[in-house]
Length: 435
Image (cartoon, rainbow, N blue to C red; front, side, top):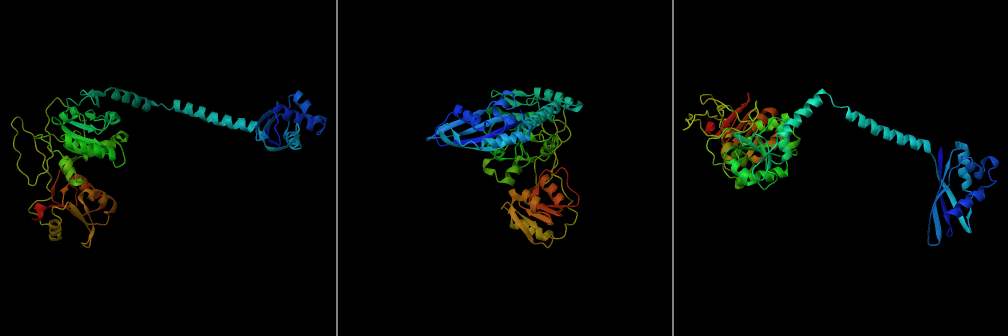
């Protein structure tokens, strides 16, 4: 069949399907001549079986009539128009209105195109595997197979959690799998805000970095960890992102920029939720910049990230000596302080103990004054054009990196934190420098 005639039927009384079919044959007989006689056309197969769908309600009947046709366009149109001449069905007045004459071949062609698209997509998807894809797939399967269970709670963990001196605490199983893909094998998941007892005990023996999502859930888990476990460092995924969706480069950057827990608590006002670590001299976080965070058989010098106010000579430990990393001093005491240092000293004294920060313009006016916990975001979005920042808090590597990006010339804080890469061209001053 080439075409399908669709017509709507309405009658004033109750009729049935045989009445409608009889009316169509009876009232079109002899109307269009012998060549278009409906009975002859149906016998020769040029007109298909007439289908009627009818429904009766409240003493009236209405429905649809479908007539398939293999005639040409002109003959089919004439046949469709002839249907509208029918004015009675059985004993009832009736009206038939042709709604459309559909080209069945076009409909079939559209279905063929859609199905062909699906089949082609399946073929292309199945042929995507290249040499690199195969290597990645095999490597990923090996890394995922390394996931282990830790403690009586059978928490998802990397294979090196027990042996490594430092561990990462993440939120869920997918986070552990993503870290395994990046070669990090010393992560353990807490599986929710209720931190398991085995993780609490483990935090007393290892150097712990909490590596959590940058969302509300990550905030809640971090508060719980700070209360019940001994957390040494805090690393976060970018705001609005999750650890399980981070790339290897993003993971490494986040772990390099981790912040000591004490400093993080001070920056974000979490003092009430913080349980200070009772561990002694601890190795610096679980993810050094250029190697996997795995336990090594040989003894290596481990750095300790502890903010101090004044440099002191390192004392040898009772069992073994370990080099102690001290905050980098930005300048020698013998060097002259930069211009405007007296104003910075007065500002630092004014905001002392308030945990606030002031962003200074070129004309020494205050562009903005915000809480220290909002300093990082404020510098990122509104810090361009400023020349200095004065704040009642610890100077960190993250703040110095942002200061470099936006072109600050001076950073003045209460004291120095762990700064591994002091930027060139920025004056870094502490309360001790300005005393």
